[in-house]
Image 1: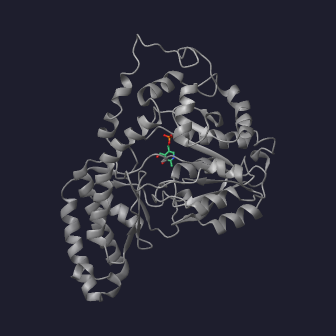
Image 2: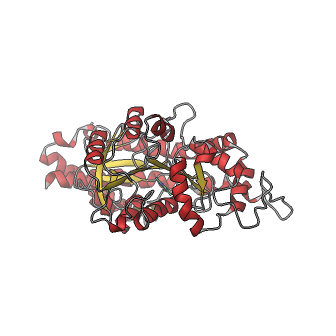
Image 3: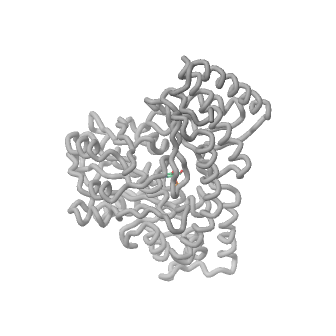
Length: 429
Ligand code: PLP
């Protein structure tokens, strides 16, 4: 059918006729007065409802002492109560004594890591603020809030492309081993934000065997989507990076982060960082100045609600049941509307919160603008690149979790229509 013919094989007359048709369709949708938002990866109301039991596990007659007898109502315990360390350790696949439980946000923990390295240095190395040049590698497309942290400290963000197998490791190895000003790399190794794919075993092994020129180089391994599978029988599994770094003789190379934000209540969860004992000691020197301890009542609430990692995994299945139809619907509409046209690509993730969508080069901004003018807010084009600048102007991050199915259907149809319309115009230019 005409619809399946790649745009590159169409004559100018065909494209002009198609553009007129698409324009008319677009005008019609514009008249509907839509008000939809697909911009950020937030859980939907039904997902939040799954965790309401968390409000019932503690009450005024609860015993708020934790396992070791500590009264969680009072000050103390710098690195987390034992049962929370065990739960988060299991979630993060690390021994309980290799992590610190923090407050409500892992992004905050990452910010603190950068901030401390900047002001006081990593393990006795020169503080970054005293260096002429500090650079950080950013896997792109990636998570905008990571890039903003390093940008905020005046650190130069250097892009490394994300491939099917993870970051381009030839490039990472080359840069990290030759440039002492490169102090770290932002990674989302599992169900990556936004591509949804996971690093291969070889990629993880190569990470653990990096030979950085800078002694204070660290991998920022943000495992935000570690248990966030969409399918029961088709899941990504990564080699555990801390253990792999140890095996490779590089025990201090990595900081690993996670939180329960997208397990229960985003912004009211618990966050943790796992790393080597040497790194933990370094961090604790600062942490004990920064705080007397984080929110133990919330830690206790989490443990009493989930009980253990099995409870958490079971809970994530319920999330998956809500999210799966949304992801599958977006993918199906994209396939039906855009498959074979040669004007767009998108990912089909098995977990996480995002689908990465690529228009033809030079079209993403205009597609996002057209969607906005028809009442559908998408993540700004370019947001997945440092400084908000996508050199190809092609990548759009789709966040299917929040809108109800019907709204998501309308929004995706509009995205596809805008993609076709803008592609037509672009080719005819
Ligand atoms: N890391 C990644 C990769 C994310 O996608 C997000 C949220 O979207 C976060 C961290 C934020 O986590 P938190 O709520 O623990 O700060």
